[in-house]
Image 1 (tube, rainbow, N blue to C red):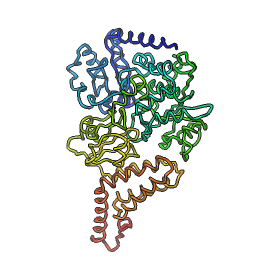
Image 2 (image 1 turned 180 degrees about the vertical axis):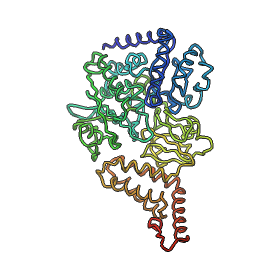
Image 3 (image 1 turned 90 degrees about the vertical axis):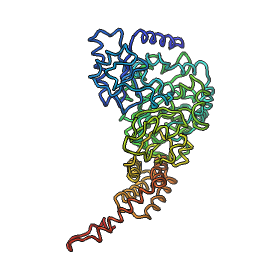
Image 4 (image 1 turned 30 degrees about the vertical axis):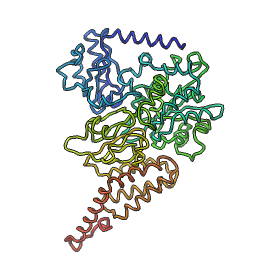
Length: 560
């Protein structure tokens, strides 16, 4: 493709889109598809055809609109109205109200208030096209700006210029650790070697997290474009997207997007007539949580068992097949094109002094509005839970919010007003993580919560190092003992010592961060532990002192 061809293709598709009077966007990402949104799209198409509206109405499968708990979602044109909880039976009435800016009054109960804080307080950067574009149509994506940043990079900027822009933007890796992206890119760029690789980590394994899945399903070309820009900046010519096989729709759309980009000569050799070559392949993960760790992921891509290795050497110097390798996650790559298009200063003006830009979170649990939110760094947790999230359900009270997935911490009410950034979360024993956010109400027992996450980490441990393999088992055993009423006050001392040992001596990030939920619940919700210990003691005393037949044997677990 020649540089001028991209603008020509965009103008042509925009004219096609403008010629259609109405565009009905039906969310066809995994969450809404599980609620049969594909049948809704089929019903709309059937009705459009039977009414002879093919020239005036176009039905488009689009990406996530955010309010996942109220899906399936349907958006008319590129703004209001938006309908929620739609079923195929509603399609005819929605068509009847197309020419009304407020939609069909008979479906007022399905109309989504776009002025509510859930939508109004978001700032869409990565997800700016989600819900607007057809992710399976490259022409529609190009009409909405896809590959414009890649064209700018290849024709106007040097690799050093690109790295400088990313550095000045202040972007930090969105995979969890928050390492400065520009610094990582410059390290790979300086590394020597005949070949370099760019890897996209799409192995999103946190319970309750679906941010990366949504981006891959809703805007796959933005991920591809970000990887291509990164490859140009660091001197790589081959990319790998590592995505878990449990994401079949993401795999399907990424595969389709790569094939479309190849046909449009946006991947392959001599992109836009330059000397830059870049190709991408997809590798499927088998669902091992540990393969989200960089070195374990690389081992898996190479066809080996996915286990971490000691560092150094770091992947930036010796990664895939021993070559310098850049690894970022889906959200990080999807942030690159907007930074190049709008400028580093624009992105750096969003967020806080050390945590720039926006972050996507999967807001789930005991909260009124569940789904995906993209908010500026620095927003408070209170605003997320009670403003965007609408607060906990009626009749219940807030107890905790857990950030960072199984490696994160459980945050209590007195810390809800801290700014949401990497440093502030670390200071209270939690992490940003990839963006999972689980709200808990007063029905949650925090010992059980810690036990759940520790069981997950214990089961997902690769077993390579003793502290993680044995330590997580021992921690889970103690938590289980306390939860079932067999604990003692001294168990809390042992539990903390075990957590500190595992945290300090494990080989990789899985083991090092696995104790976070336990340590944070011990610090913020010790009363839950003490209450279970006291109840267990009282139950044992009652069992021993109560009347029983001489031939009755008191169970050992009651006495112990």
